[in-house]
Image (tube, rainbow, N blue to C red; front, top):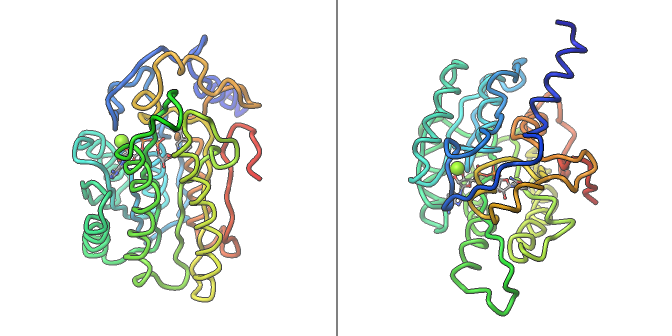
Length: 300
Ligand code: NAD
Ligand code: MG
């Protein structure tokens, strides 16, 4: 097969089902095995090139979706990884760990709900102990719940879950990890196209993602003098368990259709941005940047 054919085949396999994704719903946080079709995390395609040899990464939400694709890519680039996830996602975490092991790297599984300061501090402590240190922190865990009933109906418990998971946990975990980072280390946070083009159904979530962009540039200024780089990746619509778990099933039929590229992305298409930002050789002069992986929507 020529590389031209390979390119075409790859484009077809990423395109998603003709006619859109089948209507489907799951209870949060959602599991990969219940998704139709299964997402692509780069299992058959990601080729490592030693970009992260000997490095150690802590990835929150590393069990599934974007976090799983990042874990697979990091492992194939030569990094050991610690994965944080919710206890009910054990099967997804074990599947990701298997891919990491197949790449010849260590996978440390640390389940726990990050909505408390204590849980974040314990996660940092366990990851540091098991990996022997941390060079790359990926703040990727996130939660949203689409709502159509307006701000008057927004309940405190729902607001708490979104803000604690997306914002507080990022602050708490980063605070616990930073004292252990040394020159050359990298912090990468998953933000969203929602920071730039918010949906009314995701009022609270979009606000946390805009805040995380601000956190990224400001922390980059603080940690730059210590040789620590801080960046973010802002994905557009990506086919992960978060979507069937938090959107109305029918909404998925047209998921991603409003992007210039006209389709949703796969987790495998987001992971390379995380590799670039983690790689001391490739991005040594890149900090305070948000890389959009949005199917063509602008991130400025
Ligand atoms: P995902 O469901 O695979 O990953 C989200 C993960 O967050 C879960 O696997 C879970 O382990 C973790 N998580 C949620 N609540 C938690 C809690 N209280 N404690 C600990 N962990 C918790 O979905 P994904 O789409 O890969 O999400 C990864 C990141 O990407 C999230 O920050 C999300 O906001 C962001 N994002 C996703 C999309 C998309 O379209 N899928 C678009 C933009 C941004
Ligand atoms: Mg998950």
